[in-house]
Image: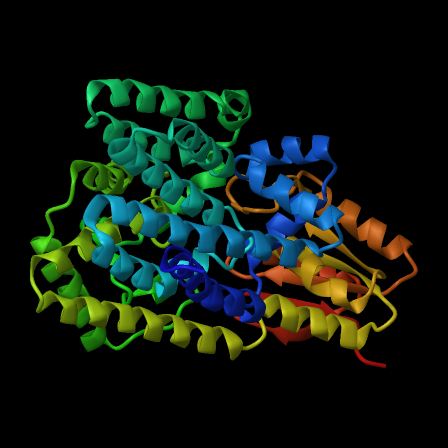
Length: 479
């Protein structure tokens, strides 16, 4: 096997390793529970559910297909992300070879292989691994068209992959079209046609996407508004260094401020030295700047730690391109690769030693008290979390949502838009007292629900058994 084959295999192995470990040790969380829930729905119900709750159906359909082959849904979703994340690093390396050269491409591959955001995208059961792959593939095909005059079919497929994987996938098409506009006329027409085909492929999903309620993305606007003005202005750059304040929005550890400053300085030094082609600049800048501008205007488009999937790879290629401008800049590049490896190692260690999540603590307490099963009323978003956490204790635990509207969009809960109907609490009380089994009630904190569910739990003869910052568990008194 020659070097032409050994090097890509080595890059793929190095990229797959931290993602595989992360997929094994990272605790599951609410969005992944939603993926599992959606993938288990019948096809007609899945498409109906997604218009209320999430983006295009491709990630859920692929998980559904893998589950039909015998895999459990969560491992299937993480395996899909692992494959997509590893392929994205390999394609980004190939794109960078064509765009900025062999050595900068190796720097990019090294940073992306271990960058905490890239490892996150490649190890969680959500759509971001596929979106990240769509970006890398579209960029690689743009570079192949520019250098070799071929790649339009792959470009169309890459844009289609992004559009069918995530609601912001069309931004990938816009970035690719901007890059295609810099090509010679004959290649430009072919590339723009390929982008148009990729975008047009998603038109059947457009009517479903337009029916999604505005409340489904309220959380994104709320998260953007919590950022200070300097953080908003720096948003497209803030999480690009491999050591950055990821912990503010993701389940990643905090890093010492001096190391974050050094990583940011190394990125800046290399970025200022870079002389990248217009294709790379546009593929990075169009989504980074466009999403930030739309967020400033009040559109729900930017969530730090997620939006970066649309521009992380080409943006870091702009940084890696700086190593070609002088030997001493290799020290900065080596530091960034080492920092990325340190960051991902720290993240893996933190995930491995993360205490049990609140839903696991609550589920364990319910199962310990009611070993033979129970009916559990879970308020707010706890319905999905508790149902997932209780699965390992057997099939005799039934989880009821309160309010009932939560079950129609379990991926998000907004107390202002999902309220109990008149008489819903009383109807629930009558249902519970008419049954013969044990009952538990979980009351979400920070919502109006305690005023309704706490009296109901008391009427059922339950008492507070466990109080967590996010919820209170009511159980029957011990015998």
